[in-house]
Amino acid sequence: MGDKLDLYEQDIENNFKKQQKFNNQSEITLLHKSAQIYMSKMSILNVTNRKTKKEFLKG
Image 1 (cartoon, rainbow, N blue to C red):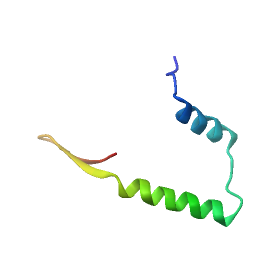
Image 2: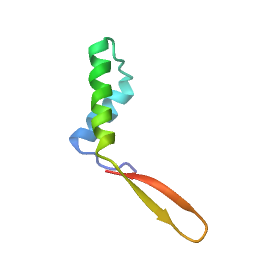
Image 3: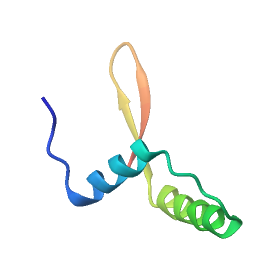
Image 4: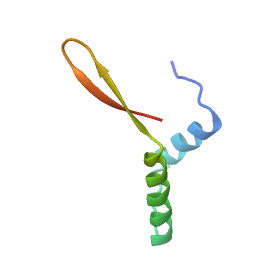
């Protein structure tokens, strides 16, 4: 059973299966900047119970 993906998720899935590579430095730089912006918007969510304490990234 597969979940139905939206267009954005389907595009990621298709490109992952093709195993596309970044061939030039400008693409790598753009990806790096995008990842930094995405991670800067994340916040840490602490989940604690009696036995464990875990941290998760929350977008």
